[in-house]
Image 1: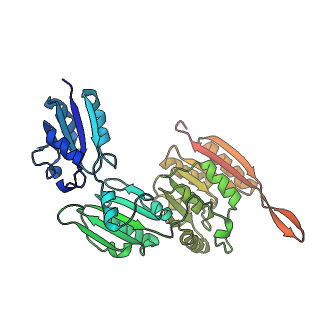
Image 2 (image 1 turned 90 degrees about the vertical axis):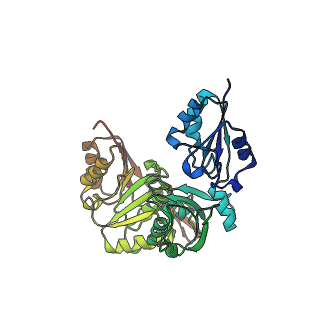
Image 3 (image 1 turned 120 degrees about the vertical axis):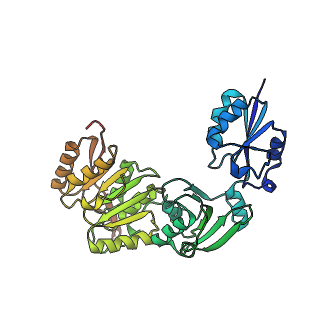
Length: 397
């Protein structure tokens, strides 16, 4: 006997919003399986916990089985997992449903062809990076990361004035759609499941490199753009990385790192009061809201920070070994980059990396010269040469 399994996107859980194809599949199935909250879509469905759904479908022995899943089968759905479990037993079809994103964007009159889409439902993480670098962000919320918590995080980061659309119980009785600022919605109680559409017209361009002229410098030393670009490239920062920037200064490297870790967080550690003020000014000026400023001296200031994927050390305050050891202790696979101008700093960094068992240690000297106009001529003026050391932590060390 050939068997057929239809995994059906139930959309928003309302029979009125089912596709015609989905309704036909449910009507013709010998058995329909659904968790309790989706039985409104198909009253004759057998209630079945999702964790048991594949096994129940296989054991039923009937030719045609329909399995209801919430939303659309291709949008943060468990349908893919069900499909893999059922494929050995027969033909499996995925029938799409109306996603909460499509429905809510239509409600708000907003196109979704250029949306940044993120899910915090049952997940850890932050959307500060996504909001920093995208003009519109759609967010699925739930659990500890509910809509109120997300709006509060936006407000605390300095984005409380952004326009946010909130949707609850979409397509169902008791549907609620609100539009207000993030700060206002942070004061609103909300259900455990909700969606947000966040608008940020002035979002920064994560693909644009940070130029020296874009930053306020004051009297604080700043790593020049040519060195920043090489250092950040060699760190191989990934979009979801957690990054430490030790001795962040004006935030020049910090903000470059933040654009690479566009879905992660950068923790900028700085002890100098003047530098801290410039760091905050540049964070707002360049729109790097996925930067968390830590006032204090490393390594003590690192104790409560999350484990880093990458560490950049632009200033160690004489504690190079302890700083690198702190990063390695929290993540045995951490990647590091250290800049040094003085030979003594270079020696200390090289010694520390070797003693801590870092692998693939590389030392590069970088020198850049910039042209300046002198009458009718262009003269090249050299910047101070900088040493750049990179390495990754070795598990075996």
